[in-house]
Length: 329
Length: 143
Image: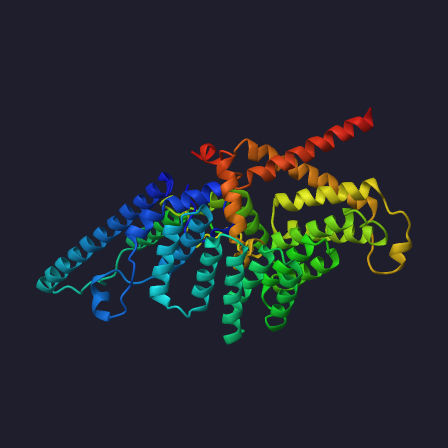
């Protein structure tokens, strides 16, 4: 089934992106290039829908990704004809196209200068600000990108996407406490996002297991991660990613039990007793094996899982089983 | 609609039609009687429907409603965790309409954009990754 053009294509696999961009000539031929706003022509032609422009935008992104610049330029032309040159979203798309066309770093610097120029005229242009930060990061100037992003979040603190980007930036630099803080801000803005809960859990697990991450905060991160994964499962039944994380964390907690009760005395966090951890581990194992079994058997109603995630879960389970049999022997 | 609900609805419809026909015949008979009674000058009878026709109408209505309710599609989950679980577990397949097309309002996980961040896409990296994927023969696998 071909993916819909109505959703942003950023999370698609390469093959579905290719599928989408191969549709480009058909879509471009069948859709009207301009829609007249005069009431007389509206009587005779199909009325304008918002879907059409979303389609063009998503097609533009897919085509850029697959290197079909001609179709991308056509999409952009139609969007410009409809919304004009000074629409903020269109400006960002134009910049994106220029970034994709740039051959070397000098040309990218020119694009960056253009962004700065636009921002000096209107520094509340959010799409362009985001493009500028993304370009800075793409050029490898990570600290510049981070400081611009912090600046941006000062005047737009409710932008969950930007907080999430900041978390990712910090995580890439290995600054775990900052990354976790930024991710918690995302959760404040979207408290029901089960994937963000799981992502935060993953970050805390990474912080706990990172080299040099041991020490007093090791247990604290693990317990926090345990909480996050549990919450993601609470928000979403049969959440493979949540159970996977839960299994990893509980296995770790069982392997190295609390070295001392010193940390609990500080009152910052309390370690769940080993009985609870054991039971959570069993639950995660049972659920993971059920998901893997049913998903591999392609049972109806169990086909929505990502193939790679299922494979990873199966490997984790078999690793766990072999470790268990080694202990028994 | 399954065949059970369809046949129940049809049975109810037949019962309803039958009740209507009976009522019509009954009133025709009543008016004939009334004209006959004016000739013989006997007191006119009350022109109300007999109880069996009324009962038949109500039962027919209930049967039709039952048949239609039986044929509705299963309800969407209203609990957050059930709905989210359905999204993850079934993917697009759980959200088909009666024509077998994916529902228009289906968006998958609505919070996924917080992780993919479309406003911050690094288009050059995506292009490089795509080129690498093509080079590794990814194109042949998908065909």
